[in-house]
Length: 244
Image 1 (cartoon, rainbow, N blue to C red):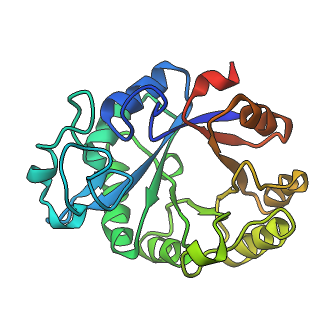
Image 2 (cartoon, rainbow, N blue to C red):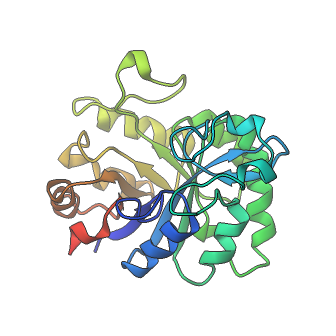
């Protein structure tokens, strides 16, 4: 059975990466949620996808140039504010199996690792709080900060000109090779291929490395059906209703 992960919460119907969105994902039957984290100017991990607030709020500016107080004055949609990672963990405690924390750069490795460790005494355990990233080198920084945190490596389908440094490419003809390299080199708990580029033969490979396959991001019924057909372990989706 494929477990469902709410992409930025229930982002198809509620403003993404807000407390309301995460709670709606739980209401709609998601087993887990995925979120994106950046650091505020004063060093607090906050939940927002972009490195600026321009797209998802009524404000403007880079997240790293705004304090937590300034960020939380902004409207992130429907009156919701940008939550801190701690606020999200507090709201979801006891409600989900996993919170997948996607970090965007190396500066987040130590602060997020530290915050996860602090929450192990607050009703969470390490297995419930995996950290995922497109850049394996950033994940290695997380592992160095705290080896107990499970890691997830994205396989990137972006064109060569758009790919981040150090990120494995993922094409249908090369995805298996890239996956094997990532599994051998970084020993992640999760491998995250794009649903549109992952070949049919990829799922058994991570299982041999005691890793799970998490397909992203499902936004159509066709993609949902493909995820089920390929028997991925988990699926990141904007709309859990696609799997009904």
